[in-house]
Amino acid sequence: MSPLRPLVLAAACLLALPAVAQTVFTVSSWLPPSHTLSETQKDWCTQLEQKTAGKARCNILPRGVAAAPATFDAVRNGLADLSYTVHGYTPGRFVTTQMAEFPFLGDTAEPVSVAFQRVYARTPAMAEEHKGVKVLAVFTHGPGIVFNTKRPITKAEDLAGLKWRLGGGIVNEISKTLGMNVTLKPAPESYELLSSGVMDGTLFPAESVESFKIDKVIKFGTRFPGGLYNTSFVFMMNQAKYDGLPADVKKAVDELSGEPAARMFGRGWDKVDRRGLAFMQANNVQMTTADAAFVKTVGDKVAPLIDTWAKAAEAKGMKDPKKALADFRAEIARLQ
Image (tube, rainbow, N blue to C red; front, side, top):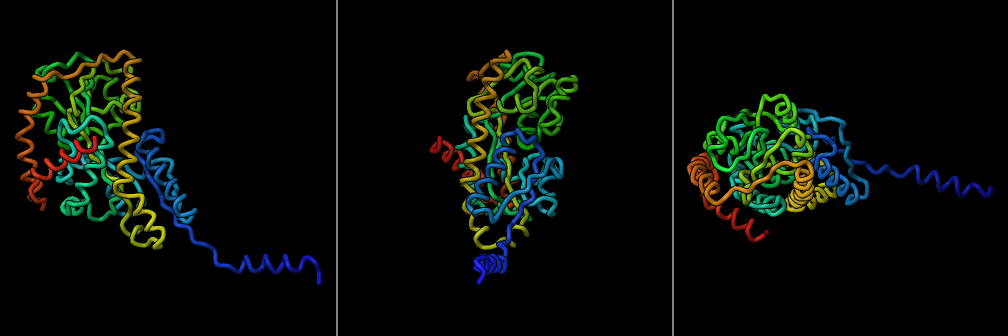
């Protein structure tokens, strides 16, 4: 027998084995690849590929399949398998999640995000608002800061007379109660709006100054203990894609979702927030911290918004929204 015959037979046996099917997720991001959300989404994909030993991988598209406000529907309709978006970019659609957007929640994103995910997991009304997609996690960015190109903001009256870019959600209502003249525009448009003078200011976490390159435009910033506001996000998968996953891949997706994913996004945001604060200092952005009187003014003006939100959330099927908000705050306090 030829000495090559055993090798030929072995090769034939290997070729006869069925190929291991690989699950590929089409991944979309409406933010640049360098943004912390794009990077965290990519990290999540890497962990999934490792956890499944290559049976699942992500195909990250070079650009988003839709702008931020249309991303939820893009995932729901199957234009992408995986993405994230801001709840407030589609006003009126998500009500219960607005609890994560009120002032003074926390000074870092990770505990707020984990607490938010825990509330989501035990609140059926929140899941109902996301019908059509598989929610992998909900999370928030870091505490919101007031930035502008014109003057220091040390009291509520200083906010009036300036034009402000906002992303939507409860922060829009908070701003109106403070007498701000607001226009709803997605975050990526901020540089053009501010540099052209169309807008005088914006509300952002520290990270966004660098991400959206507004450091050379803004001159002043005002921080609030726990943030003037927050922004809630959802990280999601197309429901049909999730339902059709092989059992072992679905198990891996589940194990990486919920709190682990919320923690990943929050921790990533905290890292770039710290970098953003240092970046502003290096670029001579004049930062101030709101004093007790300013904080009290904001709290007093926002209190009626909590009542309005609670009624709207109850109408959406949320049980005892005010208690849920109090529990959320208590959960954040335990995690900080």
